[in-house]
Length: 181
Image (cartoon, rainbow, N blue to C red; front, side, top):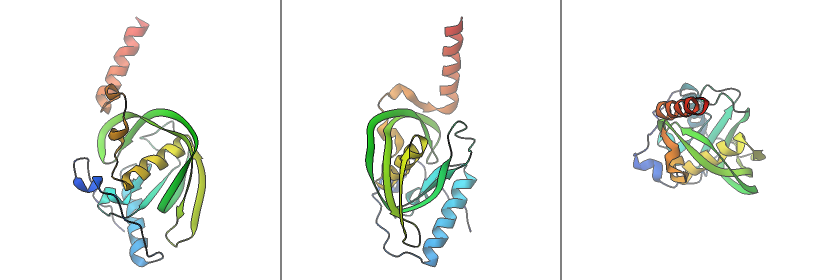
């Protein structure tokens, strides 16, 4: 199919609340999801939401076996999730470094729920339901936020833990050198 342009932070379409999908099993929906997977793969992403390519529908995809952007992350099952909902299974909060294809070159330290149960539908309209924890739960919550017009920088609490990847890595290396001196 096609690799689509990924919208970047600042584009107002990323701040819109997406509309539910009403028609399943259509050629158009299949083509959109194929384009989303092609786009995610081309960008080495762990997930992608339809609003990130300018489509204001409640569709997200995610999944990784291994990913150079997240070298230490555990595998996440390849998933198409339409009109998702979730409940918090463990309301303890874990924080970790996140990036986003719509916020290229940057990382932020984001608090997320440790474990969730999510549900929705695949492109044929068949129910999907899973429990997720760890990186899987983080990826789900990150993509779900896109459907409501929320980007990960909105969730950052510690503002000094947000910046360009290169600068954050350089600062971390300098801190390690000072600590070992």
